[in-house]
Length: 389
Image (cartoon, rainbow, N blue to C red; front, side, top):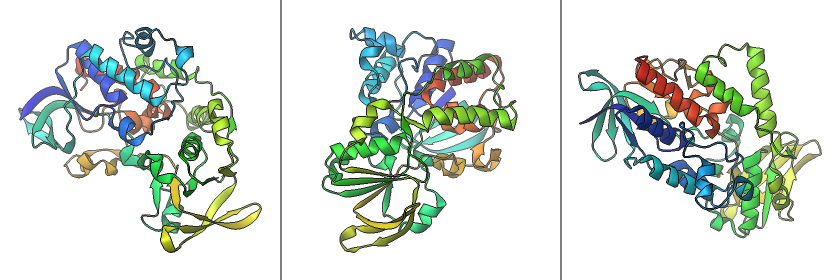
């Protein structure tokens, strides 16, 4: 069994930033996972990021996106909006600069240890095991795909795909498609499916369609940076104050669509159906479905070949396979599916830290975005070097 002071599980933005900071602090560590797996496997080619070049990965502010662009004689205005593929190029460059070489295995089980080898033990997919004094869960969104209960009841099992499972659009050519959802991902998937040759795409959502307007993220960075010196500021807000922060982020991220998307959505093949909901779904011969949409103008039925849910993600710690199979889940303090964390992102299990989407209960919605990767690494690093872990 390999031993280490710190095991980082997940090699996406949060995990890579943590590995870079651990190296900077001189912390013995191992990082496991396929680098940027969620981004490579569950995000489509042709996708663009909503974030700009200032949301980089380096807690030391050296290997930034701007520094990467300078190596190619490029500037942020010349590459924004950032494509998924360019961002992945930056991450590969970042790994090289920071000498981060994740072990390309997954953790099948995570257990508490009570012996001199370490506090926690990770059982690996290659048959190995790692004992670690501290573990950081830096997981992607994949375990947390959200299917609303009413849709789960209405739609036959196996009749739909979540957006994170539809990233190769070659199969939609010539198909009639329905997208359920009304935020950025629903509209961007509609554009990509139209460009891939879908014969029709209907987008249904229960609210007004968002407006095509540039989002203002300038106020987010100072709030996220505040965690470094005052890690408990968000949790100390009143419920009304938290609601106001969440409302403001919602207004920028959910009530607006990126302007560059507008001409790609305003296509003959794409029909927007705001203020509608699925009232019925019947299976037809040949694998098609008859979908009844109900709205202010009454009900109407359309036939589709494919149903796609752009319904987002929702934290449920019980859906993390490595925890469900180990002995830690029953020891974790959980609130409405989310782990309860201290001011250094440490869970109720000593030495077990959780970040990314798992941290949103105590650190706010910012931790569902890459803007928080540097702050996350600094908070955990402080706990590890101060003896708080």
